[in-house]
Image (cartoon, rainbow, N blue to C red):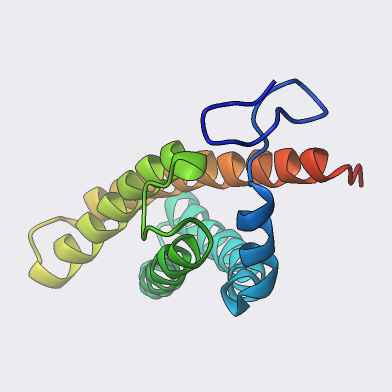
Length: 166
C-alpha cells in the first residue's frame, strides 16, 4: 500500500513514516539538525534552573530578580530554538513552519512563544505586576513542558520508524 505522498506505510503501525526517504536524507545532511540537538537540551537545563528560581521566589518571597533574569534567558533560548527550528523545517520539509509532520508541535510552539512574549511585554512595559508576571511565566513553562513532550514523542516515533529501539 502506498499513501498519497508516495511513501509506504511504516513498519511499526502501518502509518506513514514521519520522514520520507528524501526528508530523512535532508534531515541527516543539514547542520540545523545538530543545532536543534544541542539547543533542545540546553533549553531544558535553562528551564529547570529557571523553574527552580521561580519556585524559590514563590516559596520564600525572595529572589525575584534572579527569577526574572532566568525567565528572560529562557525566553531568549526559546526564541533561538524557534528560529533555528523554522530553518531546520525549511531545510527538511521545504517550508518554514507548519509542515504536516510537525504541524501540532508548531501550533503549540506558537502558544509557548506567545506566553513568553507576553511575559517580556509585561516586564518591559511595566504593565504587569510581579506576581502576574510569575503567573504568566508558569503558564508559559507549563505550555513548554507540553511542547517538549510532543517533540520527545516525535523523536521516539522517528526512531521507531527507522528501526532504532534505544
